[in-house]
Length: 167
Image 1 (cartoon, rainbow, N blue to C red):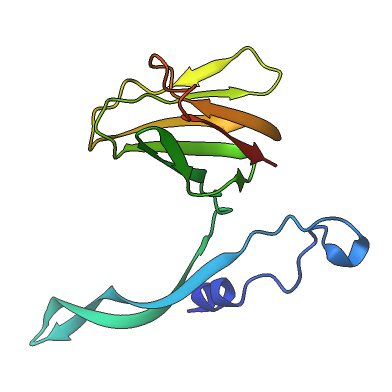
Image 2: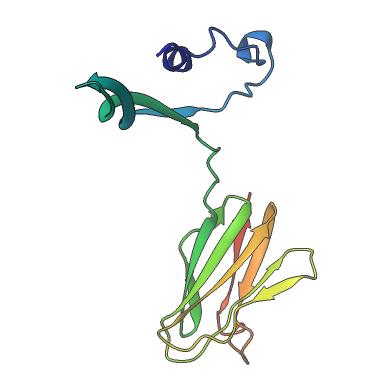
């Protein structure tokens, strides 16, 4: 019982650097809960001149703590609806970082989607997407302006060309 009490009380103070001394906190949050556990209790007793083993189970309430990992931010998402002959974006800007762009082809023709950052030669694209289907690109954006267009013949010149900001 002494060990259990010491485990429940924990250390009286923490020596980790914290906001009080100007250092960023390195302590992670802990999630604790109380749970019932079964503890096996074995006793030997004398009955009728014979030693007998008596086994009983006792319910004990214990505190279970675990560290909670830092949350991983969800990727930024940009929905692109394609139709004859244009794009509708779900947003004109998004947060730079991990990004998912989803092309939803609601037109009558197949379309694809090419993505290129201004001033960069690197280009990403979805495969040709049939009407009524979707395709995705997942990549890491850096702050700047990105161009989106359909590379099928004449589609970009007929209006399937737009931009969005990452920042």
